[in-house]
Amino acid sequence: MSAIITRPARVRAPRKGKARGTGSVIAFGVPLLLIALVTLLAPLLPLPDPNAQDLAKALRPPVWLDGGGWDNPLGADHLGRDVLSRLVYGGRLTFVIAACGMVAGAVPGILLGLLAGYRRGWADAVISRLVEAQLALPFILVAIAVIAARGRSLPILVLVLALVGWAQYARVIRAETLSLRERHFVLGLKCAGVPTWRIMLNHILPNVAGTALVLATLQMGTIILAESALSFLGLGVIAPDISWGAMLAEGREQLALAWWIAALPGLAITVVVLLVNLLGDSLRSRLDPKKRRY
Image 1 (tube, rainbow, N blue to C red):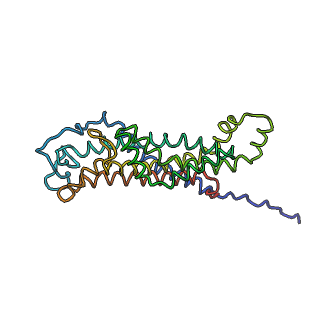
Image 2 (cartoon, rainbow, N blue to C red):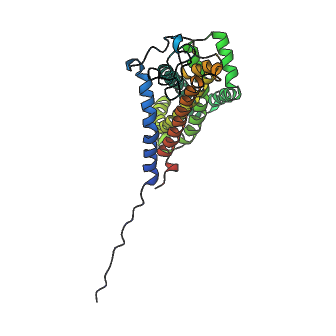
């Protein structure tokens, strides 16, 4: 009898980690993108002027409470201004400030991290001391000092918010660069006489881009909370500009009579920051090979 030789079937393990990471990015990214688009397209939406006052509608409750109406579905504040309109326009400025603050902190932080991790020596020592000094200082104290010295304005606010994140970028990117500078491809580029700046920008920077993207996503939530805290303390945006933190500050005096004035922007901040943090965690699972499950 001839022996029957069977070839064992090749079993492939499903890429659960990659699929789950992609699904999580979509699940958290799409709602966040929709919220951002609605706020950014606020002038095109059929909403009343967010600063238009109508004292006859002062402290009008939302539509689901007694006394509410569909002309003000989320109610009105103490000056009769539409809360829904102010919520959408306030989210627009909140997202713009958060994005500008994130970029203003990411660019110098990433470049300083690359320089410190690749060059080492005195550059690493100076940048590391600056990072440690920045992380040691309370953010609110720095914000009060800068705003008191330079005055309240949107550029100053963005500058203050940039101080929240640049040190985090520099520290994380420095650690990644320290590992990459010893790789064989970097050593080969050095031996080939490639300029230092070209190695950092063309070869090391693309390898740390995933880490920088995850950190930037997480920093968006931190900056939104920081901007809301500054506006709540009266150090943020100036009227007639609107942000969720400023709405929260205006509504705190009316909590006993009209809770929705402060509760709705507070809920918006909570939902957006939660989505941003979950998206950042999903991106980290998606981009970090160590966290994938095959």
